[in-house]
Figure 1 (tube, helix red, strand yellow):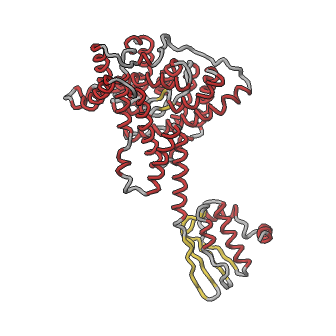
Figure 2: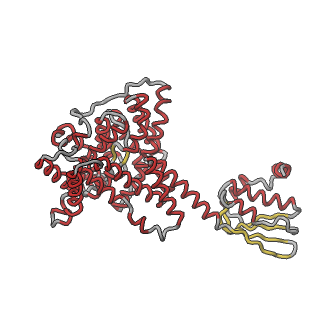
Figure 3: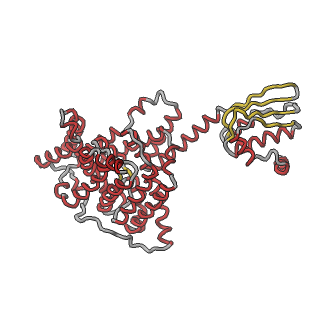
Length: 495
């Protein structure tokens, strides 16, 4: 246990400290922007980012992943805040945390194995596009100074790592922010800064129990929002964990991450913050800046609250162009460029799933909806593909006996093909259905076997089913009715 704590907290101190500082700076404008989206005061998003980052570092299941207030969650809060106010949002945040903790104990994190690689790639590409699009307002109708500063920031980010020694020691996004801030102050440039985004809080967060009636009416108001927030938060967190797993070549504990996200959101709700989840952009900034352990996430939250409360005068001077350059770097690094090159060699179904996921996410700004569409499409394509691999081969033993060899997977997608593969009008005394090389998966498949057997018997043939595996025999015995005289009579009467 002690060894694990040392590994997760103290094995990369310098990298985690510097990465945490970069992430804290990148969190500030986004937390303010997400607060504005949700229709609440900027401090709600900033306090949430601080609380969630600190708590998740301690109780989360993925070292090096950044969690805070996010745009995907903020979009779900708009109507609740508009109709009922901030206090109901805080109550919904607490209930969201409870649902996520329950999800962790129910081991729902394991459901990620049903999300195909094409969906993950589509999710990543869509998020990269959304991150880039979020920067466009800062680059629209701006002066040439903004474009020059942004270009200079990108130059620093990509070229600084090539400097001997120091290039590998200090994260280039941090250098970009410091240098561009110094240049803007020295030249007195009139460009947008962090201070123009909104009023920064000047006090530490305090314990705050939501001032709402504790009754059924309140529950009915916040319940649908809490369920939606819990689902979207866990989905985005699980997807981000998958990406960070790939970037760091390590494995995360997804069920513990569910519990951690829940505890973190309860902490945010009790400190006057809104619900949040893992952030793919900031997580990639953290990893690319050298952050690997829990210390980077913890310090991102600590640095954030220190800067907004005690160093706000300095913080307000940071030009937005510097942070735009960092986020553009994130969007470029996040996008899976190989997925474009692989379009020609990947199966058409995989390409459709990936592109559909991208289109839905970008069009709706709803990550959960995009992933849901991708998963459904992937499932349909998979079922169609497996269904085509089922064959029924007729073999003649002698003039009075016909043997049908069934091979493949029989389930809802292939059951109709299974029935159509038999010749019910053939004049034979006996039919043998050999299931040695077949597997029946569901009650639709069993029902199709019942129909085949009963139709042959109606034509006067004796039917024998042989070769069932233990699994197939179990489901056929449980749900099949072709050997039940009473049920057969009912079915026969229906024809």
